Length: 383
Image 1 (cartoon, one colour):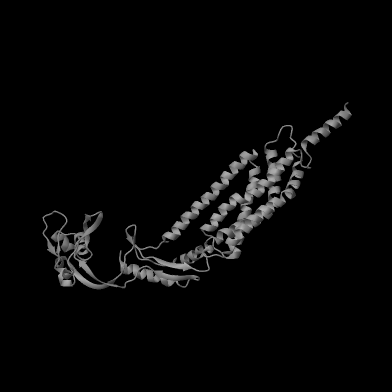
Image 2: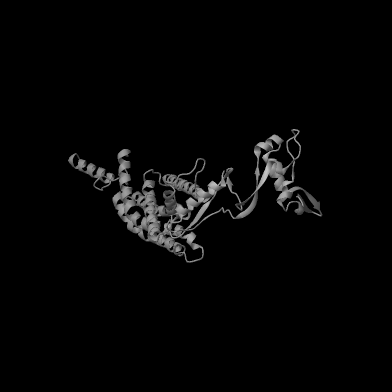
């Protein structure tokens, strides 16, 4: 509530924040630079005379700034009717002290003179008083240069950790940081929902619960590339980079879909599983590289941040390029291995009766070929 205490705290905060590296233009939104006359109200005496603090404030505001009482309309235009004391009656302190204050409550109180309940004080005051949730606050801001906002926030947190504040005073992050945290939480939920929806669609398409898991391994592989690209380029992982991650969820799974779909097609044609995997990977290598190269080259101008204002979208393009590069090359090795492991696990948990052309034993030979060989041997022994 006390502006002088807030001002002293803000100066201490600025003193702690200014040495932080790459934090420039540290400033405060409040300054005691406005000379003014402050009327010190004797609240106890005012209550005895039947006037409230609000009555006195309204009287001073109406006399000096004016109050719109109504509007005058003529030929489609409205003109405000302002109630205000003439300038000659409010130029000096004695003239203002002789103003009449009328109580707003009907309690039998009579009009009083301002000098009876208030005394003028010459002082310097702020040009404006900011409030949030009916509490006065002072904002200290700075501009990150060359470092991410998250790193600078961590440094600010450390700088203010040992700061002792008077009772009733506290510090908190501004609206920009809070809104950014909310947006991050919303985008994180969007990424999770996107992965879940993609899994359900793939499970319905492949009629399997294990094959989509092998395809979705491309997502953590892409996340590795995102982290490396952001780290190597020195760009901040902000909201635009998180949007790039959301884009990657839908892009990188296409490589796994190409591999798994063609592998299943070969198995339906009678190829054993391991041979189908070995054939599908080199066959689908060219279209995988072509689509990944097209997407990477398309994002390259944005990642270079050549145009004016392009540095805002550069982290998004950097995340997409890094995720595509790592997922493209690692998917060619990881997804086929995961496909075979999950397929073996599925066969062990849910063995198929009689086997199919797509099932293989540990030696890589199809179960149908094994059954045929057994029947042939039996016919020779027992014709």
